[in-house]
Length: 147
Image (cartoon, rainbow, N blue to C red; front, side, top):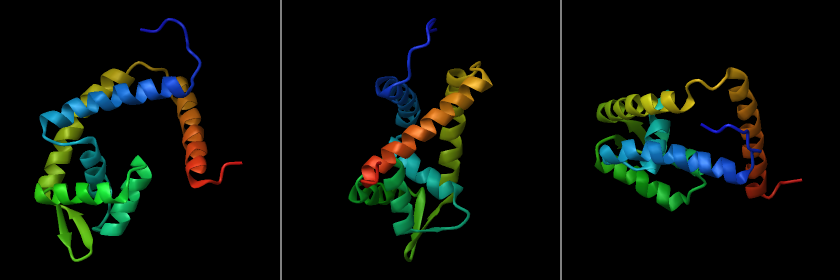
């Protein structure tokens, strides 16, 4: 446990991101999935209806800052695994996809509870505000609209 509070900066954010992502990827690896597949599948699971393929790809590109061609490949991989299904130009999650997602989510939720548990609510709120602002500013930089 850290005894002194380090100043939040890009390095601290990166270290936290990669540690948390590695924990999730250890779960995903046991299930034969990648981080990109999990993010793509999640968007299909939480959608209220099948998504236009272009919309699903755009959402993943926006979330992961990934190349659209790479995301298209991920959609194909998930379809080949039977976790997504293509219906015309729309993509829907299959029952197998929902079951897979539920299993991985349950397992990773236990890890998240250990990682995030015991952090005071006010600290989580402050961190949330900072992370939202950093995300907004970084997205503006990427869009070339930074002030």
